[in-house]
Image 1 (spheres, helix red, strand yellow):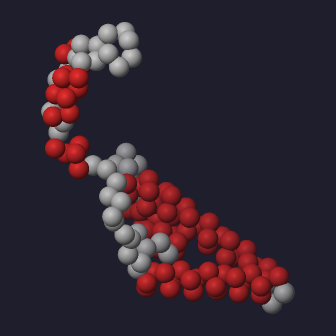
Image 2 (cartoon, helix red, strand yellow; image 1 turned 135 degrees about the vertical axis):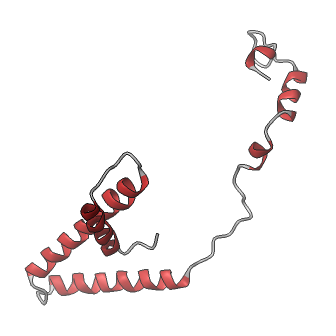
Image 3 (cartoon, helix red, strand yellow; image 1 turned 180 degrees about the vertical axis):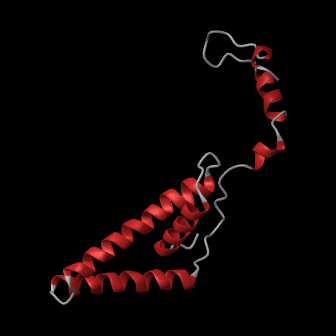
Length: 124
């Protein structure tokens, strides 16, 4: 049914109910099943959850060591650079290069981006 088949007047709510009922019946079966399933429950992947917990605890411990003077400034700068490189591997590599087909890269650049994305430690 097209928009021209619906007889509406300038008044709000003046569309004929029969036309609206026809539109409801003619909906694609696909659109009936698209929506939020409120009964769905997420499963916790405990291996990932424990890994992220350990990672964050080590990060807190490293921050305490940094401010107590037990870590060299060069180590902190190296950590910041590696973190930045990993995030660039995710945004440029995993997202742009391997998702968008219009992004072209040489095999060497692809290998570097894969290595940098791996450094980021993302599961997916």
